[in-house]
Image (cartoon, rainbow, N blue to C red):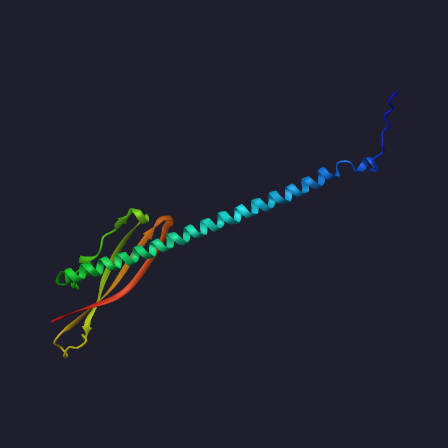
Amino acid sequence: MNHVTKRNSGFAPRERGAALVVSLILLMMLTLLAVSTMSTASLEVTMAGNDQFAENAFQLAETANEQFLQTIESNSLLCVNEQNPTVCDVPATAVPEMGGTFQTQSRFVSDNGGCPLSSEGEVVRFDFELQALGNSSKNALSQHTQGWFFCAP
């Protein structure tokens, strides 16, 4: 007859399942680490997106500024108008590929400055102030203020 004898493993009955508890604690720690890492990565993606929206707004304002200066170059007699300084402003213009708009608003400042390389009273200097606005997604806004002048007899 075969006798199977039971061997004592040397573990007390209360120590059974300790590996399961240790494994569950390690699994919980790894899960918390993974969730924390994903949360940090998600925050960094959001921050990078917001930075891109701000950069787009900046570039849109610069584009508005350039558009306005090109308009002045081609229509200087029309644009230099102290009674209606906004006649050559760039209206709100959509730029779909950047997800935003740009526009300008100018105002007349004074006409009492002297022009460079001109005799006193011969040429009048008209000073203006230009605000170029760029607005992109997520309400990112960039406003650039620039002075400009035009000399005329």
